[in-house]
Length: 443
Image (cartoon, rainbow, N blue to C red; front, side, top):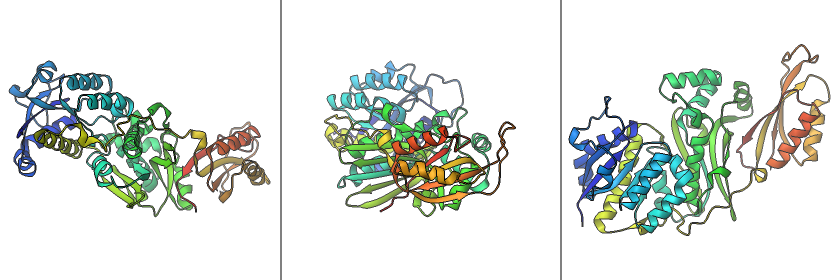
């Protein structure tokens, strides 16, 4: 049994500094709780010429990667460098050198996870990735251990703090998307380039990882449906309120017999739904299992110390398995080791409810015409809002227009898209309709 476990960190940004701080300042606490001495031996970053929140003395600064990879006394490599290409190279090299891995890299695991986990299994090494989803919320451990007795049926997640902050501010303060995005940048809740957050990619990476854990197979990320919040208008948030809904960027995964439905998009939830109460930069994940029913996990989804807390949890878990001589078999519930690919439901086969806002001429008969098209495609109308306030269009358009909102019962995505196409073709809607999906399950 080994009682001293040496760790190296590659990447020394916000999360790397947090991990080093916890390993150095909480060393005795970790020893007390784990029975092991966990020692941060080396740190590598490409640029040491700046101030760090948690400084590292020269003796622990690695000059290059080989200083870490060729050190047989280093048991665990923590990858927090970011990106895909460099971390993929690093992890493969570290696995070749028989080192266990801890990573917070959701993009890497969502897009290259099949290769990485396959190689780790072949080498009988472990991959810890608790920090890759929802920061300090222990959702990975919950899925592979706490909920192991359950057949997971459904996952709903608010998995991106930036977009949740923006939508919360738009809902509560009535500000535009662009105004709120600038505020988020100013307050440090959005990156200088927030593209992967606001276009839904970040949340899609995370729900892909959770789907692999929950449904026993790997996800082809290129087939995950992703839609961001860039086009969200306050008018739709306000009209949604009238219908009793709150707008969230929701990551959704559902199991349907032999298929798995995975999608990320703006979603109206009933305002009394627990996830509707998750505001600001907080994250939450709701999981439904066949035995436990619905469970919800809530907390900070990003930040130096919350994310570092999850990284250190993985370090301790792997350190314990090293000390006991346990290999990859301890990970058997974390992914499906038959390495099958999940059979993803095609977008056209989604079934949900829909909020659709048309911009229609202020004349009689328009609602009847739209309802007729809906009936043709087997789309049942649940509610209608038509505002009296008129909106002036371009001078070339003689008629004034009003917003017309239709809330549907559960309908086929394919049928909804066909109906919208016909409605636009017939000029029943002057502008392209706004479509927002609604998760409000009907019996």
